[in-house]
Image (cartoon, rainbow, N blue to C red; front, side, top):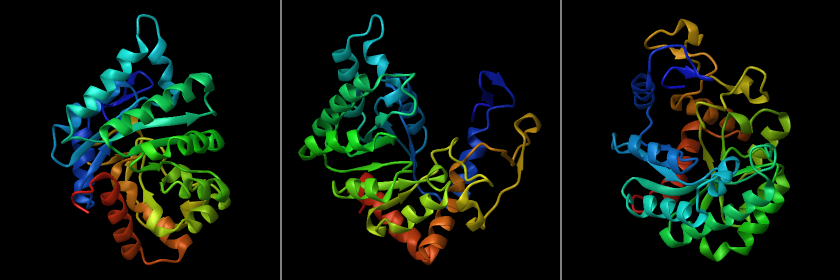
Length: 286
């Protein structure tokens, strides 16, 4: 989308530089680009190397795990290539992932395949000593079961885009993992109650852009204070955000919602969240 392409159709010029400029002006100091397959991890890494404020992850998303066994692919070779990509680029790669389980979109990859290669990617985290960037959609029971069985292999991790129950959140917290929230985590009043219940020392925020913007229909939207001018993608204009395309600078909106539902000072909460993120992904700076 930051190349101006939506569902295969070119709508405007590439504007990633504009997106990054808005992010830095908004006060972001670092950004993590997610790898969701071997090829995407390579692309994310290439982008990370273009700017000292950018970092990347290496991993295979649960909906992409069929790639391990597609025609002409050796699963062990695919896994080894992920491992080498992480090991050879330790200055840029800060986590293994995005990996985990997704039972909402099993049409892309069957649960058994997802579980098999999720476990194998946990081994990557053990070998590299990197934390895990974890995905969990409608699959908390199996995710927690697998992570519990391999807990000694993990140096830490975060379950991102969390939209589960208080009980599921507690199971994740019991594994000493962080919980990451974004616009998709703040859709319902129940979501807001869960968000308010997570201990601040185990909480992170993110955008997951270009997805997961906080929409007017979301329960959390009423707490958003900072807004940005937007135009439809067909009417793209330099310096103006694209309507319904999320950007890194919108992380302030997630902070505002959380501060409101938790009845906390946003600046103080931001400081805690920043320290949590640094502790997990940049421990030498913590």
